Amino acid sequence: MQFEHVVIVAEDAPTQAFAATRRSLCEGLRLLAYRPQAFDAGIDHSEVEIRGRDELARRLRRGRQVISDQVSLLDGGQRLQQRILGPPQVAGVTREVSVESPEEGYLLLRFRYAGPARPLTPSLPDEEATALRSAYLGADRDFVMALRRFHEQGSLPQLLALHVPALV
Image 1 (cartoon, rainbow, N blue to C red):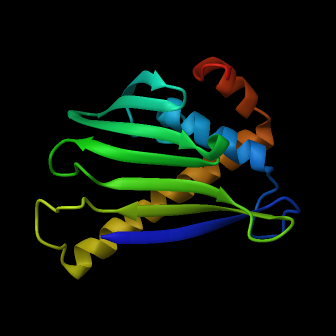
Image 2 (image 1 turned 90 degrees about the vertical axis):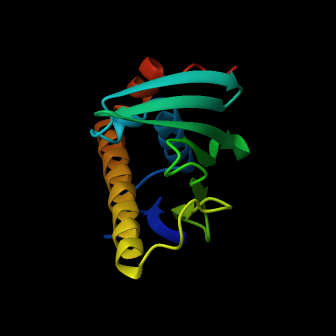
């Protein structure tokens, strides 16, 4: 299944967006990579192994379920790529979140999802695909709302200092 959507964020803050800078959005992606439970209360625990500059291997625990993935921060931290390694039912699913600027004064977050190259199961029935897209939208809205809250409270720099290795 392929799925994509955008969330508009404006430096000038029209009514439907919040005022943010490219830097604060990139910092949000960095925090998402290193400390995903800051944005998702359903994650009970995460283990992060640094494999290289902005290359991570993670294990995310939700109750009894453990998800293993690889995460890369690309383009100077403006793009996050995630590839699920396990469990087998979701292995190969990818997510990409990128910070883009379609025109001066506007920023957006683009979310892209893709199923594995070789699906283990046949295509999802329409109602299941719709439910999955809704779950993705909900999780992405939660991410943006939490990022907005961190930005407005001024807590993003402190969270980064606590949970993310300094850039060298």
